[in-house]
Length: 177
Image (cartoon, rainbow, N blue to C red; front, side):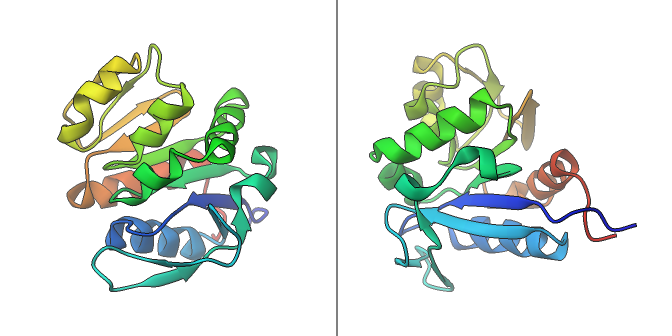
């Protein structure tokens, strides 16, 4: 029996890792849910760092309300470094975290979580180059393909996408079947 459609926020800026956006996005659509791309500005054309795919943002973070979403996904690449500079993005992430909304971040995505101040006491993974940053933000870094700690789901990079997507869908619940 099909469940209700769930809105899933994708936090995205230019320079994201192409597959870390495309594959989870496509999986959310296949799951019967409604992906919403939130960026620094509404209707921004956002290009992946490899240039294989482009998305247009639906909302600016300043217009988005975390309580409207069932999950948040933060692809890696260069996108998180831009997102973490925006106070509206950080506030959106803090509000989602306070509400216990699942937040899935891959590769450099946990940088946004670190800047939002939601890592204290959490265990997570990500791109190995951000290990110190995660630890400085109060998180414990482990080198595993996926880590689930309460509402946070994290993975290291493109090689871990299948298990990252599976954990995210499992946390969200299957809608399409």
